[in-house]
Length: 202
Image (cartoon, rainbow, N blue to C red; front, top):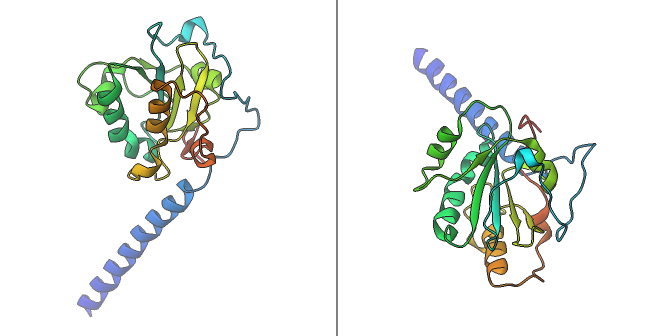
């Protein structure tokens, strides 16, 4: 009798865990709802940041902004891919992390989370997201040296960022660095998935 109860309890527990993961997989597989007051920023548009939230960038380098929420599962899965991009393109591109959601971590703690070889600037001003038309995390934004929005979208079609054929952010970086300004991005790359801003709840 006791063995049957233990087996039943373990089956129930396993079913609950399975249902939780299935729900999350379904939830984060849906596009992020567009906020009612959303102001779209089209690719190719000039990007102007408030003086109080001006990410630093070299005059002749693109700027890559990574929008990150420590409480968003998709953001956490995405961290190794962001780290790889920074390590690979750090000499050619200026990178910065924009923290969205509850401000529970210092800039140093965020930098340590990414385990980066050198500090990457960390910002936490929602005005940066508004200037780029970002309403979801994780999102990648690439601004060309002329301060125009070249790319805003996903890193990958998989929330585990494991599909190399759809490494959208990396493909966008390669296009910009090769001066291919006519790159046509997949609709899947440009539709926001993940966690809504600012509270990471869908």
